[in-house]
Amino acid sequence: MPKPAKHRTMTLNGVDVVVLTPEQHAGLESARRQLGGAQAQVAGMKLDLRRGRQLLGEAQRVLASIPADQIERLEGQLGPGRGVPQLIADIRAALPRTPGTSPRT
Image 1 (cartoon, one colour):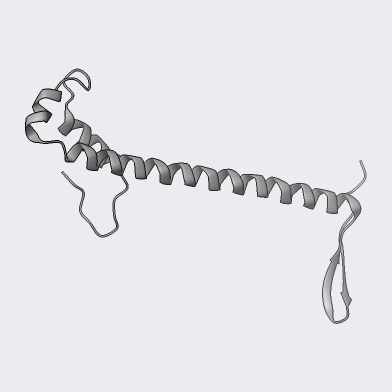
Image 2 (tube, one colour):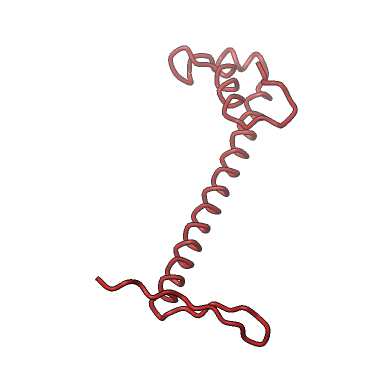
């Protein structure tokens, strides 16, 4: 098996440059495209996470604004033994903590 060709360095107009073989250049381009795809995927996941946090925050605000007399009527309708206070507690637990604040109870 032949050794992979090594890149060469040279100085051109006072600037150090690296001269790649065509195979090395193709590999570098492939890696660049893969990195771009991975960065786009991470950006999409961050956007989804941000949207999920916003939705949880909005759900918490809506549930917290339900009058007490209506909360009693809703008790148990969210699942066995689950009511609005438990749902709000679950949402609060899922939301990220603001730096410098103590956990909510």
